[in-house]
Amino acid sequence: MFVVAERPEAVPGSAPAAAPARRSWSRRIGACVPYLYLSPAVFLLVVWTYQPLAQAFQLSTYSWNLLPSAPMVPVGTANYERLLELPAFRASLGRTAVLIAGLLPFTVLLPVLIALASRRVHGRARTVYHALIFAPFLVAPVAAAAVWRWLLHPGSGFVDRVLGTHRNWVFDAATAHGVIIGITGWQLLGFAVLVVWAGLAGISTDYEEAARVDGADSAQIRRWITLPLLRPTLMFLVLTTVLLSPTVTFPLIDSMTQGGPAQATTNVYYLLWDYAFHSFDAGLSAAAGVLLFLGFGVIAGILVWISEKVAFHDD
Image (cartoon, rainbow, N blue to C red):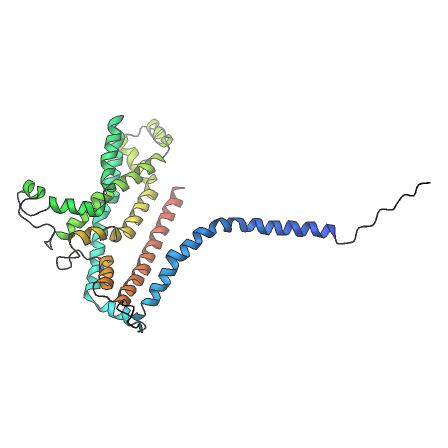
């Protein structure tokens, strides 16, 4: 005689509740995975960007001469008030604006013309053409400064021999700033042309073919199709020129003119460095840095907003 054991009844709420709980924890862990991938980048961003910014803002409220043995005296907003009253700071802002305006033709206008002209070059000649355009960007700024000082040497320099002048181009207040703008533009031209080439490569040839079917010539295609589609690329070049030009010129200024003559080449970034490491006024330099960060942040926000409007209009 066989006895069949009855199957024990499941405890209410045990197994059925455990499975949803495990699925809930799995979903939560899965939602955290993207943040785990981002955490190294966020950590580096906090350590190398936001922490120094917070320390710079804190330092701008102190008076300190960078000596470890010297006390840091709290001064509140006195550094900002003193900075805004300095004529040298206001003059450096004007020179920075002139620098940016002088570089825009090298980073926007000429790259478009060169990139469009390169379409007519084919084969191996096109590779040589691209290499010659991009080569100055690879030259170290200090090396470029040394070569250009030799080329611009008064009397015996190549430029003076060609022009037949005996002008001291680097140490003349009337020409020194133009020299810095010209050399910087010469170096940035290759990078800007490369960006425009990338923008042109992203434009489908279907637009040009459709326009030619409708009877448009090359000039009309460039005016009404190519240039409008390049507007996001050109806005990117304008943004990088505005934000990076004062920084890029620092090695040239420090190697060639040291901010002179008569502060003719002292832009706002070089003045910031001069306050910190020549005048040893860390608080004033930090205040200048905070104002620059806020000012250029507003400009960058406006340019990004314009670029998004342009991209939305193109879509």
